[in-house]
Structures are given as C-alpha cells and as structure tokens.
Length: 313
Image (cartoon, rainbow, N blue to C red; front, top):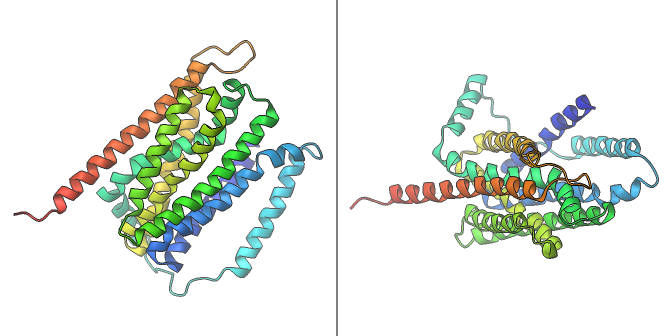
C-alpha cells in the first residue's frame, strides 16, 4: 500500500506542473490565471467524485473495485493526452544541465519569489492538509455529522472549490485588463480565506455548512500566485518557478497534516473515540497564525519594493 501511494504521488506530480508549463507556452501571460483555474477545476471534479459518489459506490463494490475503475480511467486519460494534445513548436530549450541548475538558483535566490512564496505556501498547506485530511474528522467530532452527512458536506466543499477556481481565475484575467495584478486578487481571496478559518477555529457549529463551503471557495485563491510568479520571470523559467513553489507547498502540506495530528494528539480522545475540540482549535489556530505571518511578510516586502522603485528626488 505504501509503494502504491508513493507511485500515485510520483505520477500525479507530473499532472499539475506539466499543465502549468504548457499553459505558459500556449497562452499569453494575462490568460494564465484563468487557464490555471480551469486546470484546477479538473482536480475539483476529482475531489467531488471522491466524496458522496464513492460513498454510494461502496454499496455495490469495495475499495479495490473503486481503485481498479480509477486506474482504468487514468490509463484512458493518459492515452488521450499522448495522442491528441500537440507539442508546442520550439518549446525545447536546449539548455545544458548546468544552465538548468543555474535557472533553479535564479528562482530560489529571487526576492520576488520569496516575497510571495511564504504566504502562498502557508495558505496552500492549510487548504490541502485540512480539506484533504482533517475536514472529515472535524465534521464528525465537532459538528457530530454521520458518515453520509459528512460525505455530502465534503461534496459541497468540492463544488465550492470548482466554483472558486473558475471565479478567481476569471476575475484575475478580467481585472488584469484594468491594471489590477493577479496577486492583488490573490491577496484579497487569501485574506477572506484566513477569516473563514478563524471562524472555523471558533467552532460556530450553527454555521458549519456555510463556513466549510466558504473554506472550499476562498481557498482556491491560493492558486493565483503560480500565475503571478510565472508573469514575473522569463518564460523559460516558468516551469522551474511553478515547480519550485509547488515543491515547497507539498512539503509544507505534508508537514501541516502531520503537525495538526501531533497537536490534536496532545489532548485525550473523547468518550466517543473522537478528537478533542480544544485540539482542533489549537492546531487550526496555529495554521492561521502561520498564514498571518506570511501575509505580513508579503505586504512588508511589497511596500519595500514599491519604495525602492520610486525615483529619487
């Protein structure tokens, strides 16, 4: 099982970054937020299928049957991409290994990259770790949802995710025509995302459904920094910029999943065998604090960059 999960991770790692790189080759930079958003919608559809549809399918088959169906669909999709999607003429860079490594160094030593990355990484880590692992247990232990109600709520989060990816991608692309940068749109959405998480930390059970739907919606703003960074670097570095950010995101998401569990485990389990409400508040609250620190760093770096860009008198 561990080897299988590792192979899934290895295979899936190519999906997002290859698509983002292809978009930088095929589309002008002002279209990247929308193109990336549409790409992420496919991931939202996958998350949607992993909620209530899977729960219902388990009445007819077991988890092995579900995995076999998914593996077959994945093979079909791979064949279709290989046979149908064209290669962009002139997209091969011809760089040597040394030049490629120098490009990576250029990305990771750029102040532009590090002004955006901490907030983007913290927000994405929160979104992936909570939506992917800890939202279900929270609904069970704090909202006292049964399995089907929790599955339906998770499906609602996935629908909100799909709407969010399209909405923020569309807004970023449209507002860019009026001179409003994608990171401005991203920052606005990510601030709303922090506010929603703060309300989840307070465990306002009467607002459970609306809060988690808003969590799914505003968390999608975290994808816009990919397009913003692609716009800030030469095209031949776009793949390395996106991959560099994505590497940090997934390392942080893994660490956040583990750390949330570690903090929750500091409190004894409830009589029903669930996790403590104080554990959820403390762990989710720490995640929010990391995002606030990343946001503060971003706004300070942006202010410093604007000040240095002003002509001296």
